[in-house]
Length: 453
Image (cartoon, rainbow, N blue to C red; front, side, top):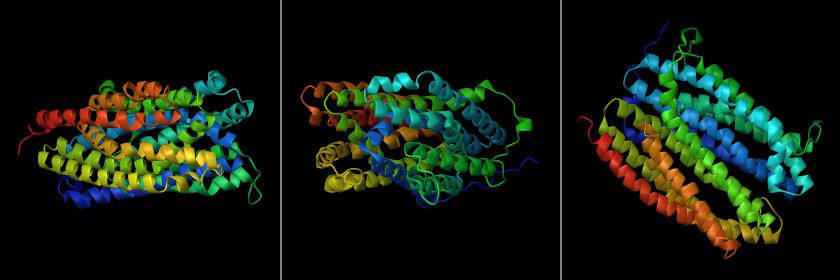
């Protein structure tokens, strides 16, 4: 029987700040655990060898693309579902969720094809070291074959976020991340009677955690715990729904995938100076996730709240949500900047005992972290664009900060020296932030201020 959820969604009437905290905190906490998993995973891999760490660093861009498909599809669903619920279109929200689950499953086939056609050439392009190549193929083959576990888990999480039920997202992520953290040392080093599987154990621990999260997500999605009616017998294929999902989702996929492309090109630029610098970039990306993932968790509370009230034509709640989102994001990024500025050597020593790597990494962390506050402004503005269904504006900003600016700047600075390359990050962030503010003012005037009082 069809349930009626229209009159009991708190996104339409509760006070913004307490509601935003209630919606965001579970996701932020789960993403802190997720980022802790990233750090723990790299910590144990680094204990195997620096070459094992380098192999996972080279694999990271493909993992970013896997995540990108899940996050992009999920972000499109989040925006469409929250706007549909806000405008009292329950059936449209239900159909969007059904379409999303099917799309997520089919999209994972891309990585199976990659595994059996391109993986060998991929590693040949970045390393001549046979050990690094062997370790990388061993790790990435498993991740690619079972990419559907990650994509389905992420898509379901963001589908649920679109209904405002953030507690379930936290539980799903916690199950996967905690299980991963527990299994990492057991499967890598062979504890409690398990065989020592090395880098393959790291991949299997990741996949088992993702699988557990995906299964729990499916159970929740088809229960009566969220404001959706999941019934495949009522599924009706709709090009319009797919188009609306990817109007927001495709730019998000591109934005996430650009990060993979940038990491790949940065590896090529860095390796001309030092192979150790490639490992340092990999370490930085894991460490910065400890700051950025909670910010993205906050944005996942901000996005449906703004989307719902935009659909309900309540401009004051849209604006108030945006203001609080911006303030809280800047605070988190300031804390991250302070940590990276004051304790960079301590952070690097988690992954290496080499004084050369620690010193080089400490300099890197200090320079790149200058960009964090600029990133806070850009991320919040991009969340506003996505909530209003204007993913193309997010795409413009991301292209500027992660492709159009950072790569040419890094390449030019590389002729001066390795230490100068890292300055490309704050330069790109500051310029793209200015553009995002200009676009935000345009969006507020054209799309939000015209809503009725």
